Every structure is written in C-alpha cells, then in structure tokens.
Length: 222
Image 1: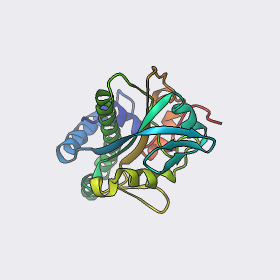
Image 2: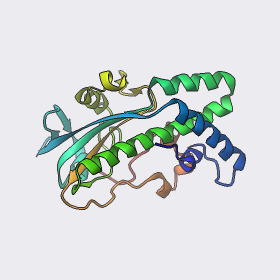
Image 3: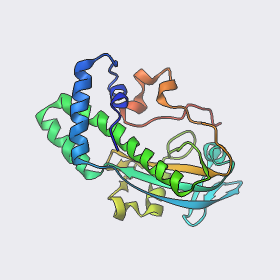
Image 4: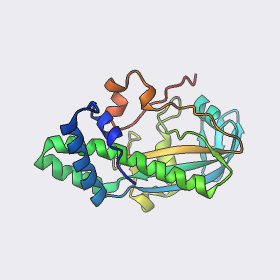
C-alpha cells in the first residue's frame, strides 16, 4: 500500500506544478509508509430487503434510506469494511506537530490518502476472494441519507475495537481519526459507477469534506 502523491497534493489544494510541495509530500509519504501500515477488517453478509431498508443478515444492521437501496439494488451479499491507520499515525503526527507544522499538515494529507489506499487494498482482496462477483462503489455512513450513527454498529459487527483498536465516539466519529467504515455490494451483474470521485467535483478545491479527509456523495438519493 502506498500514499497517492497526487491525492495528497489535492487534499493540500496544491497545484501539480508546485514542486516544493510535491517534494515535501514525497518526503512525508515515505516517512509515513516506513512507520505505519493501514489495517483493515471486513465481513461479507447476505442481504435482505424490507420496507424499512436493507438488512445485513447476521449483523443486526439495518441500512435505511435510498442510498443503500439503490447501491445494493442487485446485490445478494454486501461487505462491511473498517480500515484505520491506528494510533501509530496519530503518534507520528503529534511528533511532527511539535517539530514542524508545515510538514505535519502535509503528513495529515498523506494520512487521508493512505487510509483510502488501505480501503482499496481491502476491496481488491474482496474482489479476488469472490471472483465472478461484481462490486459496487463503496459507500460510508454519512454519505447521502445513510446515517452516521451506523459507524458504531459496523464496528461492533466487525469486532473492530479488539481487532483494530477502532472506536466510535458519542458523536459517531471514528477514533483514531484516520479511519473509515464502508459498505460494498456484491452482485452477479456488472455495476455501473454510482459515486463519482472528487476529480469530477466542481467544488473540490473548496470542499469542507476533503479538509476533514473524507468525501461526499455526488448523486441525488432523495
């Protein structure tokens, strides 16, 4: 797993031609990769549908709303996923916040890219394990009309506290901060992309989500 230099540059709102910033990103990405490896866990569960939403059988989780219904429309199973950089990243970040705030900011951007790389690795492992299945875009609590409150339920279903040291706060944020929970549908049919990436967004240079190291859904789910 590697930090995407281009993605970290975008988190920093730095143009590709900014060579000094790129050099600093490459420096901090290398430091991060030497100290931290993203950890992830996932669980693939059968899907059941009702008027109340999408049930992930065996987890006790019900996904309400239109986002889950549309994303999992043709899926008979779905994967719950949690990925984190863990406490090691936060320790490294605190060290650089004392030594050099500019490099700490760059490290934070690299961390946002790196946890997504961990999610990509988990997704690829799922794809290989379930050969012949077609994966949906991954989507997370807080996207569209999917409640952020599902964070804790996903962590509990994955036993992520014990396995990754990952917890949800009372406000449903993840701790450690550079962490992600997500859902990926598995279908017998090819899946068209439903969630477009940040590169397609006209607001990407002034996005509050990206400043927090996350993304939004760019389709209407109403």
